Image (cartoon, rainbow, N blue to C red; front, top):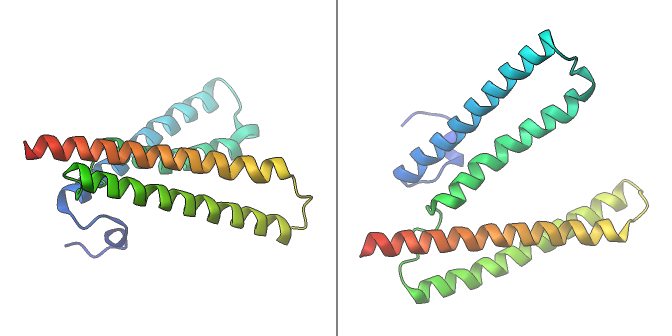
Length: 156
């Protein structure tokens, strides 16, 4: 095995590890193509220097979201869900984990607002964690359902 810090971040299962590496490589290739296209646009057509910070933020967001979405939609995350009872158990565990993550996100936002001495915008403080929790929960349910269907098909 290659000595790299990436090994600590990847799954232990060889198939999941290789698939995750492919997902990261796909996102890196897409970002490279986008950067080449943007460089051409910058050099020949339009000055992009004004929105460069937003562009870099979007690229960073894409590099995180793309592999995560591919991993979730591939159905590889829950390899231990083989029957209906383990599916229900994992679903309940996933919902508890989702609620806990949403609560931690709320506490983080509240702490961040208090430390920065910002005015507390209650709507923002409530909407952002709820939106995050809903998206996280949907990803959890989709991943669990895809994994269950994939494992059921492999078992049959």
